[in-house]
Image 1: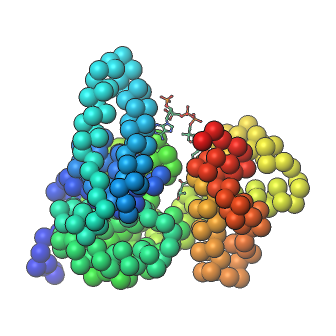
Image 2 (image 1 turned 180 degrees about the vertical axis):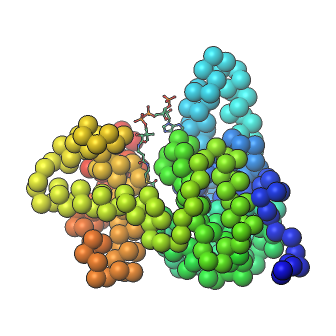
Length: 303
Ligand code: 3HC
C-alpha cells in the first residue's frame, strides 16, 4: 500500500468549499446547484462585470427554483434564495480562490491551451488535498490533466444545460484517477441532487457522443434541403418525444459551442466523415448568430 504524505479530499470528508472557474451558462449553473446544497462557492471570472452578470442570472434562476420548491410559502422561498446567494462569492483571482477549495471545477471555453495555462497555475496554487475537475464537453480529460501533478486527484464532472434542471452528471475517470477521488466525485454529485453515471475519457463521453452526431445529421439534412429546420424540430419532438428539436437545442446550448466541439473532433479524427465541418454552423457563428444568447440562431429571441 502506498501511503500518501498528505491527506486528500475523500468521499468521507464532505466537500464544503467548491471553486468554480468560469461564470458562463454552465459555470453559474454549477455554482448555483452547489450553493443550493449548502456548500460555500467561489465563482471566478475575469472581471467584476462578468461576476455581476453571472450573479444576476443565478438570481433569476434561484427565483424559478424557489417558486417551484416553495409554491405555498413565498417567504420561505425568499430565505432560500438569500441563503443560496450568500454562499456564492465572486473572485477575479483564481490562484487566491482555490486556497481553501476541496473541489475545483473548471468551466471555461473549450480551448486546450487556455485550460492548460489555467490548470498549471491552479495546481501550484491549490493545497495538495484539493480535487480538480473539468466540465469540458469534448476535450480529453487526460490531456487537460497532463499539465498537473495531481492526475490521481483529477477527473471530469460533466453537467448538462440547464444545470439547475438536468438531473444527470457524467463522472469521467482517467486511468490515473484514484478510487478515493472517484468516490468523492460520486458522493459530491449525489449531494447536489444529481444522478451520476461513470464514463471513460472517450470523446463526448456518453451523452455528447450520441447527441452531437444526431445534431450534425440534422444540420446536414437541412443543408440538403430535405426538410425545413422548423419541421425537423417538430418531427423530433412529436415523433421521438424529445423535449426540444435539434435546432432549438443548438440555439439553446449555443452554435459557437457546437462549432468548437466539431472543430476539436475534426482535428482529432480528420478522416472521420462524421466530424467534417458543417457550412451552416460556420456561417452562422461568423455572422454572430450564436443562438439564444445573441438573440438569434436558427430562431429569433427577445434579448
Ligand atoms: N433555472 C431554473 N429552473 C429552470 C431553468 C433554469 N435555468 N430552466 C428551466 N427551468 C425550470 C422551469 O422553471 C420549469 O419549472 P416548472 O416545472 O416548475 O414549471 C421547468 O424547468 C421546465 O421549464 P419550462 O416550462 O420553461 O420549459 P420546458 O418544459 O420546455 O423545459 C427544458 C425546458 C428543461 C430546457 C427542456 O426543454 C429540455 O429538457 N430541453 C433539452 C435540454 C437538453 O437536451 N440539454 C442537454 C444539452 S447537451 C449539454 O448540455 C451538454 C453540453 O456539453 C453542451
